[in-house]
Length: 146
Image (cartoon, rainbow, N blue to C red):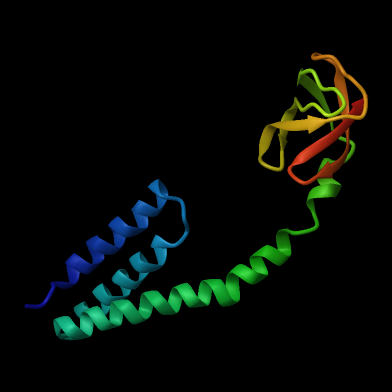
């Protein structure tokens, strides 16, 4: 029993679309492997064993290529740019902040992908005040009165 070429194409498209529902950026490689097998099955008469072996090898090769080559350069290009974009930005304090207590600050335009961030400050600042970002400490912003 051989799978028809169009079954691989449909399966590949379904796997790629599944990536939209489950954003892991991992399923897409199996979908691309299925598309490759579909194209090869269209061009050549492959047995079921050859189709499954090709799909497995192509999918694993694409995953390895992603993690070894492309993902490393992707991380390098994104690191080190966060501080320069955020420091000095002015936002509105949504919930009050005090020393050793966290608050929330909202910005007019999204900062690093979000318009609301958890923050802390050295002095108490009431909700509704304008604040300026001093630094980034872990996943929190340190703010002061603007």
